[in-house]
Length: 188
Image 1 (tube, helix red, strand yellow):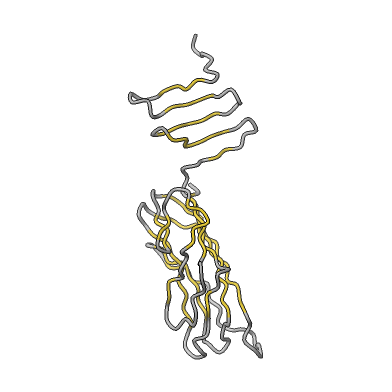
Image 2 (tube, rainbow, N blue to C red):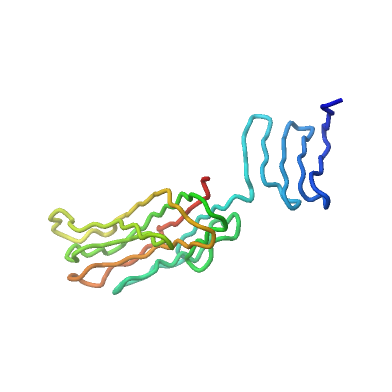
């Protein structure tokens, strides 16, 4: 017959047997590459891709009194689903489009500074998220959140990191809070 039931069986697709398709008895369809599950579809149609690059990191402590352009330290990985995040930097394992986002909380922000600028720096581009005017606030806010989200083009081995700069004027009193996060994943 052209179609044969493979219930609970694994169909090997290459000579060394490490690429396969499996139809399990619990209505799950599994696609493996190099003996690792690359794609799994359950009975309800939920698709998971456990090898897909994805990460979320945060600082373990505050960076205080920032005085110059500074790389934000994201030294605690909440998860790093393909091992592509290290030393505050995401490195794209393959060419594609990546959704990259960050939330940076600044403490003790000085409204007298010309600007505050967290930014995403990739191998191909720099994306700024700047505030230049605090609308005549009479006091410095205790904290301020900057959020950023963008779909970016990255080639294999391109990198992405988050930096912060405070413009001239004002005091160097701004701290980068532990309530900051940096995340990303491969979209397509």
